[in-house]
Amino acid sequence: QVQLVESGGGLVQAGDSLRLSCAASGRTFSRYAMGWFRQAPGKEREFVAACNWSGGYTNYADSVKGRFTISRDNAKNTVYLQMNSLKPEDTAVYSCAAGSDYYRSSSWRAMDYWGKGTLVTVSS
Image (cartoon, rainbow, N blue to C red; front, side, top):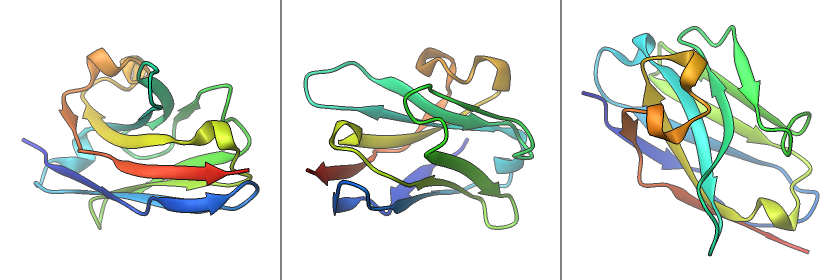
């Protein structure tokens, strides 16, 4: 079992940067693909980014490609989401998730464990 806790959200202005962190408990963290998803008010949850167990393979939603970077530190049981050039449309609750299959990690239904999320608000 993996427990996930996100941090790093907050209120920023358009163009600013934020780094989200997701700390995982359990000794099996390095076995899992990790993903970030977000949900804006009144909208469905959407995929943001994912990486495989080593971080060597990554995948991004088109809307964040070139602005966001996912990375992980297995020694620290932590996955990160560096968000640059933030836009008001990036405003959402961001959640990290762990899944056993990297190739399905863009689908929230394929993820096994979830954090509670951290709110990112980008003002214009």
